[in-house]
Amino acid sequence: MRCPICMRKGKKIFSSIVLDKYCVDYFQCPECAAVYTEKPYWMDEAYENAIVPEDTGVMQRGIVNGVITNRLIRRFIGPGTYLDYGGGYGIFARLMRDIGYDFYWYDKYAENLLARGFEFTRQKVRLVTAFEVMEHVEHPCSELEKMLRCADNILFSTVCYDKGRSYQNEEWWYYGQKNGQHIMFYSELTLKYLARKYHLNYYNLGLLHFYTKKKIPRFLIYILFRGIWCMPFMSMEWLWMMWKEKGSVGKDRAKLMGKG
Image 1 (tube, rainbow, N blue to C red):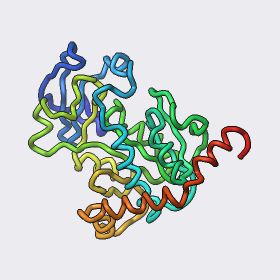
Image 2 (cartoon, rainbow, N blue to C red):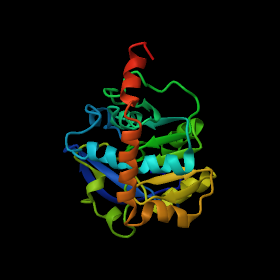
Image 3 (cartoon, helix red, strand yellow):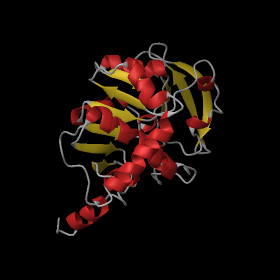
Image 4 (cartoon, helix red, strand yellow):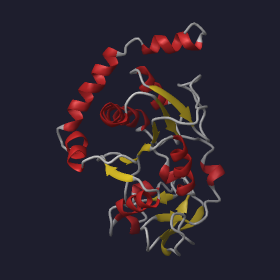
């Protein structure tokens, strides 16, 4: 199996049972360190439910990601329109619209339940968010290229494996064999490799990852996102935005009713 990112021949590291019935081989690339499954022939079955029942953190994750995204937009992106790529049921797009950001939704697999009327139809936006996306895709470069056609700034989540330990242990929870949706896994080395490939700057924000064409001083990233003091201040900014933009829900309602 060749690596979907750099096309080098990968080394098989283990086999595991996916969806309680398929024996699947997992490989690691010697060049970019990506870990990936064999060709995922089980995906139609895995996506019978776009969000699996055991994903109990979907609401909490949306709020935490919103707090970080709010600070990133305010400090480095600026006003405009934004896209939540792979937006699930529309939770995140709705949260961000509720605090005044012009967010839109796109997802190939899920039904838009909470951000209806704000489906993505534009060509360019200021920022693409892609939470719980990169580990689900068979061809990461193709997906990244689609995002880059929309924006020069991409904020995304994925849990990087711990070099030398987690990737060789088929019991690592992030492999998610029970639901079968996770098929690509990254180390920080992999994310840096992708950044170089597409001439982007890569910043680790702690919980999230940021690709951008901008150059940002790394000490500023640490001060704003990585220190233990950051989350309380970001949460206060979120609450401030909720109060400041408390009319946004009504504005969207009026717009959808044709009165805005």
